[in-house]
Image (cartoon, rainbow, N blue to C red; front, side, top):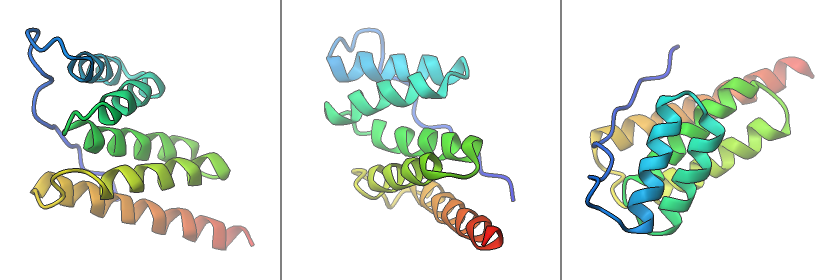
Length: 119
C-alpha cells in the first residue's frame, strides 16, 4: 500500500527570521531536493525550537527514511522517533495529522511482518 503524500502548510515566509522559521525553511528545501537526512535534521531543530508544523513534517520524513532502510535497527529507531514526534505534535486532530499517524501505524505493522517472516 503506497504511503499518502502529505503537503503541509507552506514554509514560513521570508520575513520570518526566527531560528525555528529558518530551520523549517531549510528542512523544506532539503526535503524538496530529496535529501531526507538533512531535511530531518533541520525539521528536528525547528520542532525543538517550537515550530508547530515541524513535528509533523519531521515524523513524515523519518517515516520515509525508515521505508528506505526497510529493515534493521536503524529503521526501527527511525520509526520510534517518528512516532514520538507525531504523537507529540500540537495538532494531531487535523486530517493531515491523522493520515500521517495512520501511515506510521502501517509502517510499524509492515516492519513487524518483515521481522516475523525472517524468523
